[in-house]
Image (cartoon, rainbow, N blue to C red):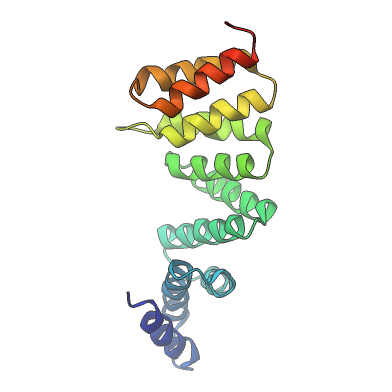
Amino acid sequence: GTEAETVAVAEEILANEKAQPYDRAMAALLAGSASSAIGDDAKAEAYFTRAIDENALSNDNHYTAMLSLASVYINTEDYDKGNALIERVITETSTKNPDGYGLLGASYYNSGKYAEAVAPLKKAIELKTGEPDVQWAQMLMASYAESGQDAEAVKVAEEIQRTSPDDKKALMNLAALYGNLDMQ
């Protein structure tokens, strides 16, 4: 609820000629997060870009800024820029964080690149500990189906239904998939 104030304070720091690169980078990162939270993608993009360009953040914050910028690109349907940033973060960090892979898979899925969505979604699901992310599994199932890998789509749909037997949507998706494949 204090996003506007956060942006205002960040702007003061960014305008201060005595501010050091780290101060400017953190101010831009926080302003980017605040702008993103209120749905101002244009400002969020500018702030996250500035935070990265200052080249003064810790590695964790630097890569957080990159993933945040990638999310903004994806929000604005600039999938190629978003995907490139996510792939860069994954490559440079050798991350085992499933969220980066999930974001990349979702981006490919949402841009209609179903075959490309499969590998990152599989990796996200593989790396996820604790409660599985049903949305990733559903996107994986749909990606398989859309890219003509029907047997794999059925396997994923059956697994979703097995792990969530009370999920009517999962059951209907499985039934529809069976019907589409003449698996009466």
